[in-house]
Image 1 (cartoon, rainbow, N blue to C red):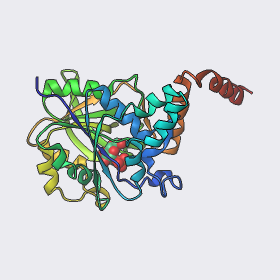
Image 2 (image 1 turned 45 degrees about the horizontal axis):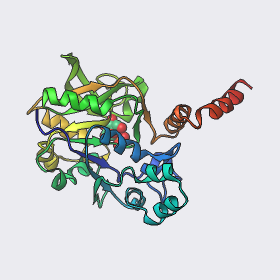
Image 3 (image 1 turned 45 degrees about the vertical axis):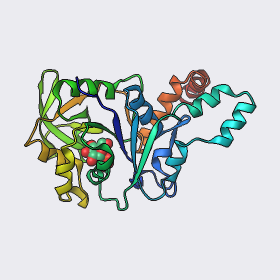
Length: 288
Ligand code: G1P
């Protein structure tokens, strides 16, 4: 058994164009689902897996993320003095975690964002979490990916079946089942449905090995003129196997308006305080 996965990289420099105008001056990572910003769901998912070092790749208009994970002394004092202990616990729960922030000066793509994390990641395997892919905490996706990584000691990417018409929104893989995992044979970034090798899409959870940085360093821009992680993984595949972990569900594309609404409804229905009144409201709205 190695040292396990201790570090997680959160690319968060994207412009959030699918969610304008809300994301014009505020980070999409800070959009709330019920009462927590998208990025906090990702951070909590990683904490659950024993990850304790967080590297957030930020950009213009992203300062609210740093403030969110900082200590809020005045607010804490106020809550303490007014006996609001549960709320105090809630906002201080993540205070002991270390966050490093790296500013990606130009939005050159996901591959470039990950490359920016090299000095902090060093020579360790690490997780990558795209916070607009929100995962229901009941589905232990990252935990199971780490377990698979421990077996294969090679990169693992999360995979989900998507409707054919949606292949142009994702990295799409070609692969075959090997020992319960998918051994990836090929990948293509955002193919047209007619050219897609399958309907198996990469979703925003990766366990990567540090040799990805050597590839990313030399990676030429690909789809959309951006340095694509998918292209770097294709190059890495000539040196070592790459595996897919097919998730069992519970994933929402919360960077998209419809996916965001779906996540909000499902998470509200699971929330102990909101579930009953919200269900009543929905019943009335839908059944009249
Ligand atoms: C990125 C990746 C893509 C992957 C997707 C998952 O695309 O480039 O391969 O399928 O994340 O969310 P983006 O959504 O950043 O355009």
